[in-house]
Length: 254
Image (spheres, rainbow, N blue to C red):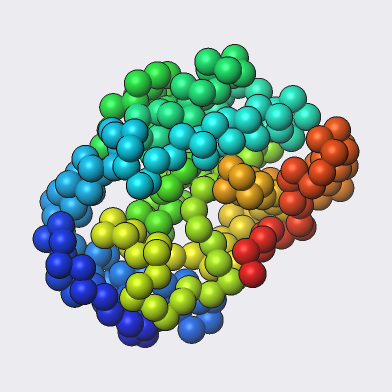
């Protein structure tokens, strides 16, 4: 990776932040954040999220997206795209998606977070089973991850025929612009369509879907010949392209 650009935050104990970029796949990351101590990183996250996670009138209100994610996962379960039971939301925050799934769709989603206390269906670390969960969900996590080992850990909980659901922003190219709206003080990693395809290849996923209202990708290990007809059936029932499908990574945002 090589230096890409810098941004001056002057907030949350952040001064100048230096962003670096991979010339091959376009993945970008904050070297400043990656080199922070664990203690400073935890403090930064706590200070920032204390202002955004617990108020309904903040500019990052996520309720509409959470409901659309719960709806999407419930419909995919009904269609047989995601197997029922043994669902895990890794890095769930307070467990908003789990609460909506349980209340409106009678679906149980286990919740786990290292920094927050989930309000529903909380799992202990010993409840997380390698290759033991039919769905592993993470929302607004990938942009906070400072090392590849953490990504591999999250993915390691997906069962061999399970699905991996990811909410983050994935553009074609990360803009070389300090004013880009995604450069929040706690965002340190920025994926591209090419870097996500590399992750899919390395983890053994073969196809994926995306819904623009839920802003959620779901990756599948199973043969595209098995997944695509189920996607088409759901879209036909909905009367529109509810799920955008592709063999490989669904590079929706060009």
